[in-house]
Amino acid sequence: MSETLKSRKILNDPVYGFITIPSELIFTIIDHPYFQRLRRIKQLGLTDFVYPGALHTRFHHAIGAMHLMSITLDNLRNKGNEISDEEYEAALIAILLHDIGHGPFSHALEFSLLKSIHHESLSLLVIDELNQQLHGQLDLALRIFKNQYERKFFHQLVSSQLDIDRLDYLQRDCFFTGVSEGTIGADRIIKMMAIKNDQLVVEEKGLYSIENFLSARRLMYWQVYLHKTTVSAEKMLINLIGRAKDLVQSGHYIKGTDEFMHFLGNDFTLEDFKNSKDLIQVFLELDDYDIWGGIKLWKKDTDYVLRNISSMFLKRNLYKINLNSEEFSKEELQELWSKTQSRLGVPDEDMKYFFSYGAISNNAYVAKERIHILTKKGEIIDVAQAADLPNIKAMSKIVKKHYACRAKNLTL
Picture: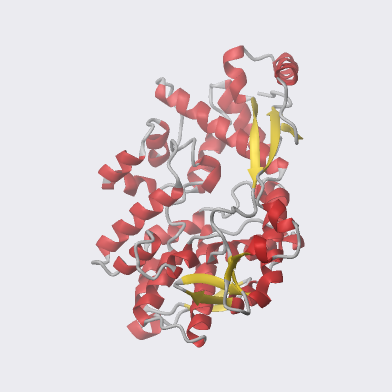
C-alpha cells in the first residue's frame, strides 16, 4: 500500500457510516499498538450484563470522536474562524487519544487495580511517550490536551461540559444499548457551535438541543451508566480484584498474565508511572482479556473467596442490590450484613468481599464549568440562565443514591 493510499483508508462505523482517516500521522497513531489496545477494552465495562448489545470498545469511541471533531472544525471554518491545517490535525489527535490511558474495564477498576490514578493522568503520560516516539509531531496536540494552547476553544472541544467526547459516547452508547431516551441531536448541536472571545459557545437557536442533550445525559446515567445491576457487577469485580491483590501481596500464588500479576502484586502511584517508562509499557499490555482470563483461571483456585466470586461472574450470579434515595442507617446495614453472613457462613474478615455499600451520584450539568449560549444580541450567558425551563437548574444539583449489595449464596 502506498503512503498516499494509507491515509485514505476508510472505516465503516455503525453510528456514522464511512469515516476517512485524514492524514498519514493519524494513520500511524491508529496503527500503533498503544491505540490498537483500545480494541480490547469495552467502552461500557460490565454494562452488557444489563444491555447485551453494549459490546462496543474504546477504539470505536475514539474513532467516532475524531470524526465528530472533523465535522465540528469544518463547521467552525465555514463560519469564518481561522483554523490552520496544523491546528486541525492536532485537535483531531487530541480527541483521538483522550482515552488512551484507560485501563481494563475503564472506570470500574480505576481505583482498585490502580490506586487513585485517574485515566486522564495516564493518558497524558502515554501521549507524551507517543510524542517522543514520533519525534515531537504531537507537540501541539499535547498543548491542546493540557489546555496550554492560547486558543482555548480547542481544549473545550476536547474536554468540557459540551465536548466532542460526550457527543460521541452518548450517541454511541445509546445506539449499542438500545436506550432511545439517550438520543441527542449531535448534528444540530455541532451546527449551532460558534467561537466568541476565544470561547466555545452555542447559538441561541440551539438552546433546545442543549436542553435535550443535558436531559439525555442525565437519563443515560440512571438507565445505563449507573444502572443498579451494573453497579452490583462493578462492586463484585472491585471486591474480586481486592481479594486477588490481598492474596498475591500476602504470598498466595494465583494464576494470571505476567502484566496482571505485576499490578496485583504492587500498589503503584502516579509518581511511579512518571518515573518509569517500563511501568507504562507494562500497563499498556493490560486489557479486559487479562481480567477475564484471570476470572476463568480463578474459578478453580484454592481460595474460596476468589473461587466463588469468579464462578458467580461467569454464571452471571450477581450480588443482590438495594438502591435508596436516603442513606441506609447503621441498623439497616447491620441487619443486611448479619443476614448475608448467616446465609453465606463466612467469617467477619471475609465479609467485605461479599458485602458492599456506598453512594453513586449523577450531576448532568456542573454549574462551575458552564455551557455558554450566544444570544441574538451578541451576549454570552449561561445555559441555565438562557433556558426557559426549570429542569436545567434542577440538573445542576447532584443527585445521590445509596446502595447496599451482597452475595446471594456460595456454591463452591
